[in-house]
Length: 134
Image (cartoon, rainbow, N blue to C red; front, side):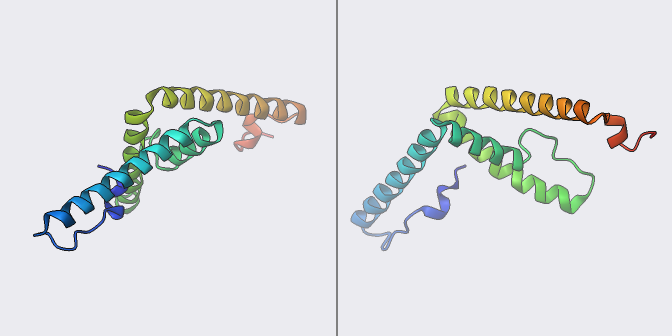
């Protein structure tokens, strides 16, 4: 299901075919604009990074189970939104989704290398940060 539901135009008079057609046309235009936006955003590095962070914040790439019922329900709601966005991306620009995931993987690897080199230059180890022996 798409998030467009809140943008749909209401029919003024459902018995008038003219009003129904106008509402259908407005809805189709709104859907096309939404899809065009996703495609345009996914065609840039910044857009792919933004969508990736949005999907991460929606727990799309992580296990949403926390063991706490209320928090689980909240996270499942976030995940539902993320799945809808994921579906839009994969449906309309699957190649850009693959590029987005490769870019995210490269960024994560660079971050890990950077943090490893910083901890080595500081003379600290992960065990010290984790509360290990001094």
